[in-house]
Amino acid sequence: MSIDSSKAKYLLVCRVLRNRILQGKYRDKLPPERDLAEEFHANPKTVQVAVAQLEALGLVRRAPRQGTFITASEPDSAAGRTLFVRLIAPRRESVIQSGDIYWSAAAYHFQLAAENHGLSVVSRFATSEDVVAQTVSQARNPQLLGTCILSIPVTLAGSIELARLPSPVVLADWELDDPVVSCVVFDNLSAGQLAGEHLIGLGHRRIAAFMHPEDSPSQRDRLEGLVRLCRQTGVSMTNHQVSPHEFASAVASRLRGPDRPTAAVFSTPSSAEAGCAIAGQLGLRVPQDLSIITFGGALTAADSRVFTSVAMKGHEMGEKAFRLLSDDRSFEKPRRELVLCHLVKGFSTAPPPAESSS
Image 1: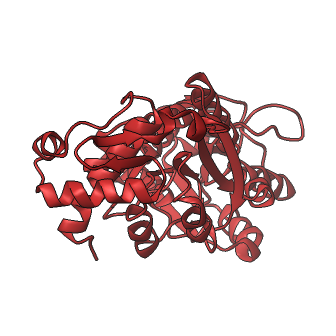
Image 2: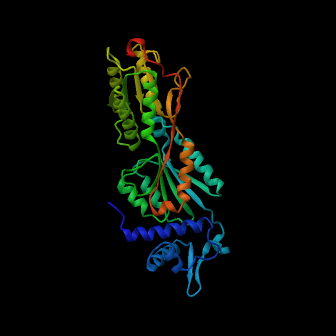
Image 3: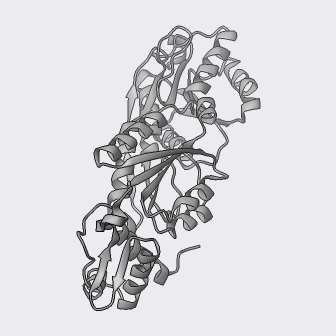
């Protein structure tokens, strides 16, 4: 599926002009349509259609033989006009259950960047089932600069619908194999490699990964990075994609027996904490008998020490998401921005037991 090329050009012109108007880059009038057609390498008819759409949104008014005037610069139209961006985030209970706590830093820094540019932020919660409908419902608001969808899965069909809206949309912490809207994602491939490098550097040669069976690009890439590194170094690794109701039995089964792993990788801090509890029930000490590493952020265990984690820089994600919303280049072609991850060493990793290190 793809967007028709003629529609894509019309949307490009409309979105860029709309963004410039809202940011005050034009004072009283738009440049002549022939100049805009030359700038965008577009047919004059395409520019006319885009300007007509801006007029329908109430951002401009066309006067015969005088030009196209910005209505925001007129006293009657400017009254009460407050520009804003929308931030749509996961419902709080789903975030707490998953343990992905870095999203709050992304949300905070997105809001901070917007406010530093004189914009207000309207925050809403959504699920993957209703996020597109929520976005579409407000997309034609003439005061809306753009929308950031944070950590919510969006289908390809949904992203194509978002790409057709007059106001821009940026996906944060979610991407598709064939993206049609700009996105900001963590460098998950490197994150998986980073987790593996830490464990292998400590001397571990038997590693088990316990991942949720979600078909998410981030989890898939983290696992791929870990698998690649283990293959390159000849380290034995087993991958267990288990649903929540199978989690406890799957972890306990793998940790029993003489060939048990000396290190375990968990997809979220909450699953790492559960894994730590299961290991304790089996008489395994963390990290003396079993090292544990996770992704996403820092979550304290019962003894108030922090798990070793490949941490996500949520603040950088929020800042980059706002910049993409403000950048004309994001409209011409979907852009993909990477946010690097870093290792936070905690109590939960150590060299393997001496009899298991060989």
